[in-house]
Image (spheres, rainbow, N blue to C red):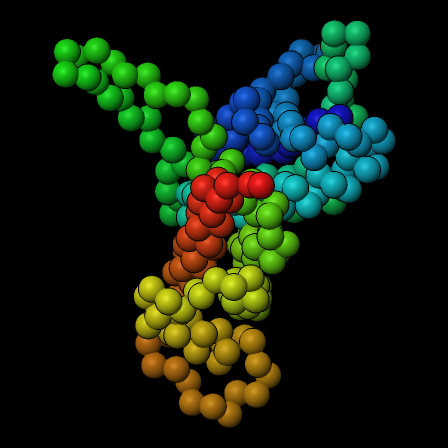
Length: 242
């Protein structure tokens, strides 16, 4: 089965750019039997599932991780949700509905998911690059190699608070990536702010000077996770297998 996604116009546009076919996972718009256009997520992880319940249970985790991936690409909150499942029957797309409580999401200051770059050779001919996974798809593939990085992504999905961001940093450290390496001063500033404001109940310590803004803290942790995923993906693709 496939997943039906619920996304606003901005998130839908970004996900269509970030998760392109034929690479795994990918999203596309497909008309169902009633003529409605649905945002469909296809993934190898869903291919082996045969029941609606299993598909939806697995889909929640996949989409949460993809929201974490997307947030690290556009450096903003990605709030795509699972809105049911779908499958092809007799050449028609059949939708299976899933009802749950509604939630509202707001985000500001988004970046850009992808840039279209047109290259030309010395004779002025347009050079068409070979098909390749997007950075989002490469990072998702890398996350499947590390449960801890997947957890870090999940903590950073949506609009994470201080507690979730600190957990994401701990996941990075436990996975063997040093988030305090490059730009250590910013990470120290983040740690002091998270500890004083929301992570510990004991507030007797002195308030940190120059605390980091929560929105900047989200950007910082997402950037660190991107570095870890890109590093892991590079190791995975360049290390020869026996």
